[in-house]
Length: 370
Image (cartoon, rainbow, N blue to C red; front, top):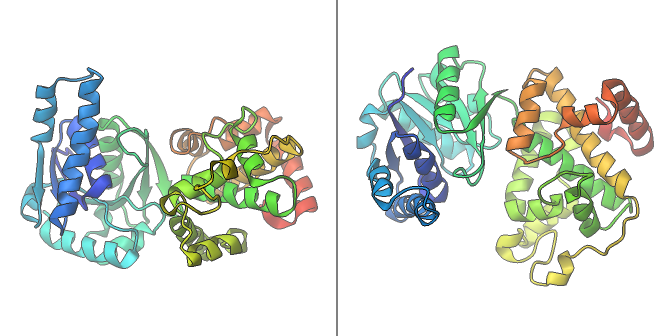
């Protein structure tokens, strides 16, 4: 289906980022929120990204104004009367998303595709309050959407072929790298990142290394990650992390149990960088510096990456996504230099990885059992 105009339901920073990627692709945008403050913040965020491009001489100020003029901010659904696709970007609560989708179903044209930017919630559940479940899909951008290349295109059981193709094509038109994913808890990237995070925490609990050193090990060439997992958790926010792991736990069982420390930190209000304290105390620069120890470095890296491989293999066996799309997602959404199936090849192929997984399962319990 040809898409000429999109709606964005939910402004703020993410809404502004989505408005940027849409207008940059030449699409007209209806940007809606219930609060003018959020609406203004969304337009301001979009302008801020464009102004950066102007300063870098990647576009002229006149071109910037032409792009921003494609945005129609609104506090009601009036501008949604002729949208072809809507991207929902409201808070990550199922009840809120369902209410918004019910409104969109009433207010948008019959042909309009409704897509959610949820990071972990069920697309089928989000769309169940609509009368167009065949035209509901997931379109998960990564933050900041203006810079991150990946879009997970999530297909629920009821999503039609045309809807999936439309969302995929729009992501490509926006200059993104889309991957196709079945509607499954955590989709691709968040499920695998949580598997890595939980294994890193197990390594620390077993006394293999301090978390500061574990983070240091993982960003070195052997680990190939853009940032250590404990730091990443604090940057994302522990409340969100606990929520996502909880969704995975409900879907996949004990291997995704929310760690006691994370529950305690959230209960205490220590949510990460935003509050100054989380898995690290960010008020003290010395508290986040590695000790310099290299003890057990190779073992820690191998365990974390092997945990990701084991979960990725489960994911592929379940038909959530292809091996190629899983690796593409981890390269472009998590910025892993060693995505799971490429890493398997580096370590001797599938048979060698089978042996490693069995070895680790015997030593460390069931974390690696497929």
